[in-house]
Image 1 (cartoon, one colour):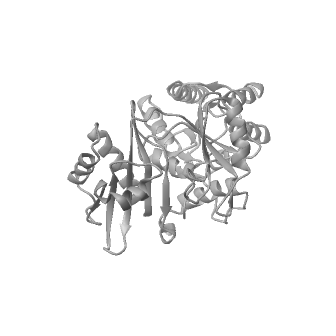
Image 2 (tube, helix red, strand yellow; image 1 turned 60 degrees about the vertical axis):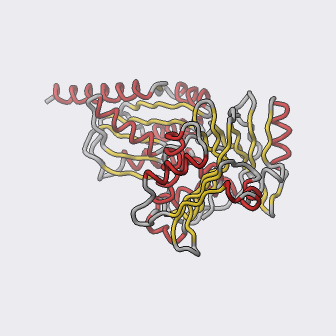
Image 3 (cartoon, rainbow, N blue to C red; image 1 turned 90 degrees about the vertical axis):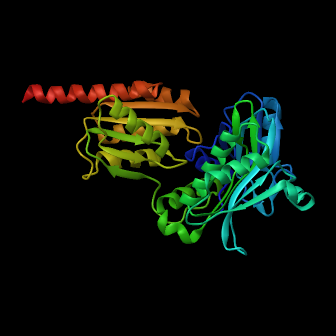
Length: 383
C-alpha cells in the first residue's frame, strides 16, 4: 500500500521525526493559514515538483490562485483531490534518507545522500560517490556504527540529531514491515532536522500483522479519493484498563502521554481509546460509545477527551461529542482538551452546548482526576 504524503508524515511523527506543521485541504476548502505557505498536491505518483504540483505562496491571494490550479490538475491520470498546506521552513541543507530492501542482494539497506531534493535521481546517476548504501543484518538491525557512518558520510553538522532521525526512520520501516520509507529531502534547519516529504510503501502481505493501521490508512485514503473504504472495520482502538477515568484521544502518542500524566496526578484510566489518524464526527461519536457502553471497560466516573488537531478538525470533533451527549443524555463530567485546526469553531460549539473545555493538557488531566475524586467522595458519603 502506497501512502499519501500526509499519511507518511503522520507515521513519521509517531516515530519521532520532525515534520512541518500542516493542514490537509480538500476541494472547496480553504486552509486556515494566513502567512507564507507551501501547497503540495496529494497524489500517489512521483514527480510533483517537476510537474508544478508543489507551489510556494507568500500571500492569501497567491494561495487561493494556487489552490485553484492544483485542484484542476491531473498527474499521471490521478486527479488532485487534496492539498497539504504546510509552514515554510528555513533550509540550511538538504539530505536524502531511505530504508528499503535490496531484492538482488537479499538484504535490507540504508541509503544516504549527501544532498537531496528533486535532482537526487540525477545525482545518483552522475555522482554515485555521493550516495552511500549501507547493508545491514535483517535480524540484528543496523548498529550504532551504521548510524554514525551515515552521519559522517552526509557531513551533517549535528551528527547525533541526524543519526536519531535515521534511527526513527529505520524503526518505522521495521515495525510496520514497510517495503520502503524515504525522506527526500531531509532538511537541516536552524531548529534541527525536518522531513519535508514522505514516501512510505507498506507490504500488503503484512496486513494481518497490522490490521488497525491498514484500516486507519484506508479510511484516510477514502477521505481523499472519495471512494468508499474497503470493509476493514473502523480506525478506533479501545483497550480496557482497570481505572475509573474514561480516556479518548485522537492519536496513540497523545493517548500514551495522557496515560502518564494521569498516573502522575494520581488518576487511573479505565481504558486506552485512540481514534486513529484522520477522523470525523461519526468516529468521535463511535469512540464515546466504545468507551461508555463497553461492558469490558470498568465503570467510569468521568470522561477525558484529549484532541490535538493536525489533520482533524476540532469543529467536527466537537460536533461528535455534543451529538453523543444530546442523544444519550450522558451526565458524567466530561473534560475536553482541544486545540488545532478549526479550534475556535470547536470551542464555540462546546460552549453553546454548555460543555467545558480546557486549553492545556495537564490542566485537563488535573480536572478529570479532580472530578473523579469528587464523584467517588459523593458515593462514599452516601454509603
